[in-house]
Length: 248
Image (spheres, helix red, strand yellow):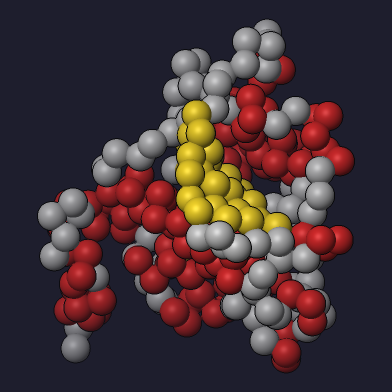
């Protein structure tokens, strides 16, 4: 079987979709994404993007695999404990779809490196676990005019929002959270149900593929998921006039 025949069979279910078809799938194949954080959210998002045929993925995470990661970070196994997350993830993703070009960055990026990484992709998916990184990623996306898909999970709760790329009119991540919120809880101290980050990461991949394929995406809204009750709801994010990202 030729590579082209294999690709067509692999993508057959997308090609059959009226909303995607050959044109949309070609756009996915030409697309690229930066995934910040290869934790429970990033693992799920990366797997679905690569499986769907995205052309290029850049992974960035400076951490190594810990045994406490294994319940939710499904790209990793026991033999990976102590190894670089991005390199293990890249190897697994390359095996999943050899046609996808994957770059692994196993260090914390400084401001200039982050700006360069953001500028070199179509969009950014942020599944990081701290506000300092989230603010830095948002600022880089605002400056480069790139779409940011942001996700978070804690306990039995998850959230997702899509920002940009028209930041002159629409809100950014800093319009949702301010630096005063940096003391908010994280999953290390409060726990998280393993599949919840996977739900959020999967939905982030859905939004990314919609954007690449040319399907309308709802931006400037916060989507909230409560696994305990099964409730899902969304709220509008207002663009803050005093948001530091828009101050000259």
